Structures are given as structure tokens and as C-alpha cells.
Length: 296
Image (cartoon, rainbow, N blue to C red; front, side, top):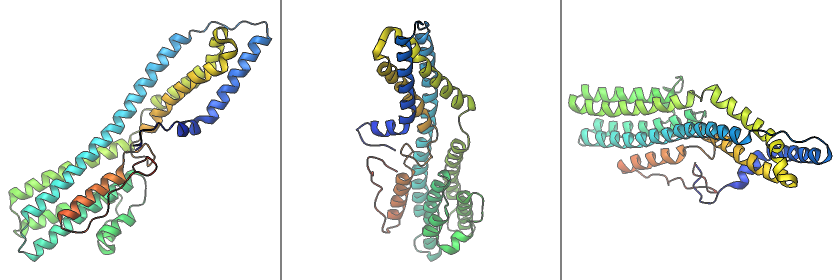
């Protein structure tokens, strides 16, 4: 996620310079042809076309931002639920029972492993390293063969809570409260996976790109009569505005794409790890800080 206050114009131009260069050359060609030929430029309804395109791109960008914001809200819920689970486990399980004391640490570490593995899965990365780092090789080996490693860790935590109830470490009311938090965690995970696995409809992805480029092609033809020799500059600037609006939707549509526009999953999962380890009285890693104006 970009956190710097300075607009990253250079990065935007770098990504679109080929399209802009082609557009500028086309604008120059149309302008030269207009002045060297006896033909007159046709009157095109650019104002109407531009208004429709602006509305279309606006709806698309709003839909993309809603997906990005929902991803952030779901991870906010995951942070809260992780803290609630840890607080409940530490409060309910007795300290004077060695088995309960060990179980506290296991459940909290499993929750840390869960969020770190989920982060890797959403970014289409191999979660094995994070699972081994937090759980250890023996415990990680029990879940790494599952198709959904994060869900396997979560299922195992529920079984540990049920085992604590059978052993008399907690009562049924406390188990119900912990399971309610586990359901909240599952719901947040399901929402994240839905966002990751369900792209925008094809019409939202293909039609705006096609009509935006068509509009940029028609721009100099409709503007050359009014702008004259300034057509390449004016047309290119207007085209840039529409191309940037198109790019904004592409940048935000996948909130877990592991790009500079990503929801900062690394920072948020590190926050969870720090909070949970400090709840156990353990040494915690340092928070993730922005690098070159980007928080990962």
C-alpha cells in the first residue's frame, strides 16, 4: 500500500509510456494529415462519448475500490478476532496446570501461523516456510499436505479447544465463547478467499479497456479542428487522464495481489504476531515499516 504523500507520477508514466507514446504519434499523424490534406475533420460527439466513458470508468473504479476496502475491513476483523482468541485462551485456561499452560502457547502460536499462512495463500506464495517457522517442522508437516493449509491449522485449533473442554480445563460456556471467535475468523477467511477467487465480471474488465482506447484514437480527429497544432498535446493529456482512470481500476481490483497497491498484509500479520507474542510475554519482532513509501 502506498503511504507516501507524494504522488507517484513517475511510476504511473513508466507503466503507460508505451501507450502514451503510441497515442502521441497518432495525434501527430492526425494533425499533419489535417493540415496537409483538403479533407475536413468530421464532427464527432466527443463530449457525449467522453461523458459515457467517464461514468463507465467511475463505476468500475468504485467497484474496484469497494473490493480493496472490503479486503482491508476483513483483515481488520481478523486482527481483532486474533486478539480476542488470545485474550480468551489466556483468561480461561488455568496457569497452575502445566498441560493448560502449554496448550495456551500452542493455540496462540497456531493463530500466528494461521494468519501468516493465510497471507501467503492469498498472495499465491508457498506457505511452507511460514508454517515451519512458527509451528516447527513436526507440527507443520501435519498440515502442509492439505489443499488449504490455513484452514487445516484452524481446524486443528478448534480440536485443541474441544480437547481442553473434555479435559476439564474450560467449561462449556467458555468453549462456546472461544468457538464464536473461531467462527468469526472463519468468516473473515472465507470473505478474503471470495475476493481473491472471484474477479470482476469480464464485461467490467474488457469493455472499459476497449472503449477507452477507442476514445483515445478518436480524440485527435475530433479535437484537431479546434486545437490545431496543439492537438497532440491536448489530445495526449486528455487520453492520459482516461488511461490513468482505467489503470486505477486494474490496480485496486485485487487487494491481495502482492503489489504496491496491495492491502498491507505483511504489516498486518506482523502486527498480529507482535500482539500475540507479547501477550504470552515472549520477545516479538519489530513492526513492518514503509520502504520507499510503500507499506507491504
